Image (cartoon, rainbow over all chains, first blue to last red; front, top):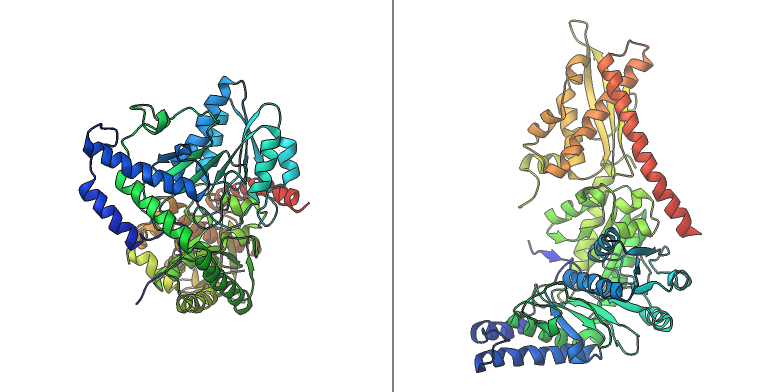
Length: 384
Length: 167
């Protein structure tokens, strides 16, 4: 049985062109990029070239890019790094949306435990924040607003340039977690008034273990990792040269192919959504029908619990994901679906299907067929 | 397939025994809560054996829930069949977990779903037939009711949030 992978929002397979260049650096470019000798300088050069390539994609300067190990680390550095710097300026209030990734929410909650004040921005039923609410929440004491570019579960893409404009006008820093959009959607940190931005490599067919945080030149942050003073003293750790080179290559490929690929994915996405909603009764789409990631589908199947559905599909050789509670410790469904105001049954019965570079129409049709069959089966067992 | 679940659990999940309703059931028990993502309805037919004791002749279930919830529902319908009421009340969650060859630690609570549905069904049966409810069953019923309340209170927060969003 040919397996069907439809969980590209969780992670992506590495592109063979990326692998090829990484292999070269893994074998031949082993030195510490901080070393002064020619071995070290060769590694340093590879890192700096990668940094330039990545900076160009978001219209940043290369010295504004800090390489990290993951989007989680980047987001931690953004929130905590800014918080500790803000403390020195006597500011202690930050604002994050309710649908941020756990690494932002948990960092914000931790900062709260350390004496900072945190406000949570609510979202409407499609997952958009309310700009008026944002304006009201920003006060004299506020140092940061963090709102993700696109949501990883429901795919909603925020109008971040409007958020950026508000923050810039009020003199507050704006951070956006672009893990789901970097390389896919156009990002211009200058035009969009972005002060800090997170992106990750393994979401765009690059290796795991590498990501970056963009920090606008005039923004002061404190490091979390202290040591040898790498990355301008903001992130000490020997640089993972092959991964960084791979990340840059993956970014370049994505940018070059994004427009065409997004068109293809949008067509597949809209086809699949329409087919599921018309062929399977008692279903509805979560998130906005158009203002969503080209590869994201999130649908609630009433009367069916998400984990059961994921497992049945897995037996059918199809990999998707769910926002159901059953794998979570507190037994509550995903905080994103809760924030949308979904009633429990619809939240527990949600499925996230995320498409990618290797997704075909044939795979989509097979998945629709398997969905129909298994939902019928599970609904027969269900009291709802 | 490699899975966090045992082979036996997956077998019961994929081909559950005795699912469906019993239209003229003598006892129906409901357990779980949609807020937590699992609800089980257990239907029992109760008759008498040769000795004149009340025994469970037939058991069926309908369950909304995860793999563990469906598998434990299936198992309990097997376990109760032919048992006297006293025997059925002695079925423990450990027995269910054992029959399934174990459950992942965070799924152990799912096995309670089945024993609670059984306890509730028998409680309702005693109540309906105006029989004296055994003290232990009465206590279990009270505990189940109490935890239902706690969950409903938690649900209030969610309802409030929904209302705020829809405004």
